[in-house]
Image (cartoon, rainbow, N blue to C red; front, side, top):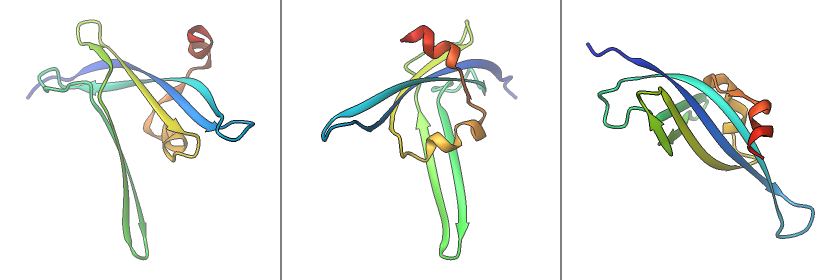
Length: 111
């Protein structure tokens, strides 16, 4: 059995929404952090996969988000992700349920 290691993951998320004028896009930068357990022998050790299932009368709906890190360092135990989503994306509602914590203090440091 392979021992897992804890990685401190950082997500830089660009949230896009409609601007004040037609064709204009408003962009908001958010930063989230998360601690993930990874197998160092995995070929993609820091990849993140989140899945949400909803059962309804017609069956089951499954939403899956998979991210490959922009950078990762197993020795330093860090990984960095960059993603861009629409403001209406359901992912924004579920990040905290997947144990991602929004960090406004880091958002200010990166703008």
